[in-house]
Amino acid sequence: MNSERDASLRDWLDEAAGVRGRLEPVAGDASFRRYLRLRTDRESFVVMDAPPDREDSRPFVHVAGLLRAAGVNAPRIHAADLERGFLLLDDLGSVSYLDRLDAASAPGLYRDALDALVRVQTRVPADAVPPYDAARLSAELELFPEWFLGKHLGRAPTRVERRVLDEAFDLLVAAALAQPRVFVHRDYHSRNLMVHPRNPGILDFQDAVAGPLTYDAVSLFRDAYISWPEPRVHAWLDDYADLATRAGLLSTDLPPEAVRARVRRDFDLMGVQRHVKVAGIFARLWHRDGKAAYLGDIPLVLRYLLEVLPGYPELEPLTRLFESRGLAGYVGGDRCAP
View 1 (spheres, rainbow, N blue to C red):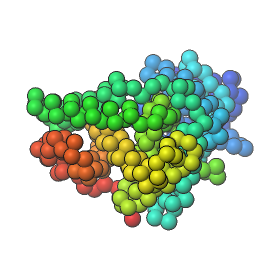
View 2: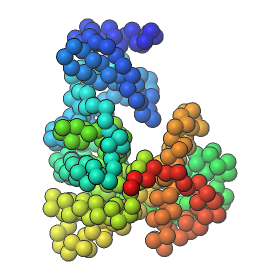
View 3: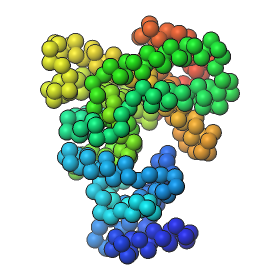
View 4: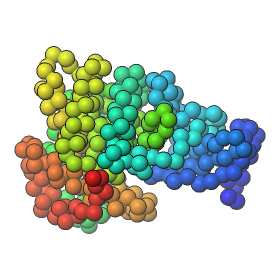
């Protein structure tokens, strides 16, 4: 570490935060933030370095406070310099759900994740975060034709394809907005949940919004980094529907099976929106930002789409568009758990 920013960070840790120790790099994410582990003689912290010209750390600080007030395990912020983009955080460890998930561990880990999710959805006011409105949902979907179809596959949508996309996107946005509105983490998946004595440790929550009930369940159970057989996913989703009903997030006027069926439909359609968006984001990370690591995750994202779409006749034109573009040829090599 010898750059001017590195020196400024060390000075801040020493003078403002009052800690000294050995700094080690920690795996980063898709943003421009950098993470370092600070080890002292007695404990360890995580240092976030978020250059203020590229990242705004205020949402991170705000949402961390909301999550901790809700009683879930988000990192405490010990010191912050928002003007320079430096934060000193609790260290929630280095073992993610993705590192630990297998057939034996999954039931317990996902049970903890669902308990934390429902706690947040019932205890964090939705109005405390920005709305996940039609404009934002639609803008996310547009990443797919621009970055995946246009930039990655090399051919922008034709006029006919554009009409199919517009009609499908309108349907998906309407379905999302019809769901109950709650706090949404937006990336509640195996890389952002840490195995911890207060399980799970929750990271990467700064983009939280108020939006559809099932969005975070999609992130969790149709994860872009690990997949599970559909019977397991449906069983976990039924557990979530039951928890959400008992917590007052879903109507108790319907029989449990009807509630579960509605949640499954909402979950599937929300998943189509998310996976269309994610394919666009992963393509953009490569073509705009030079980050190739996420290209290997696109096949699983597309597989989810191709498996779910045939169950929804109203989206048949989108299914045919994907078939005509040969997306099935990109599916394979995904990270499937036993």
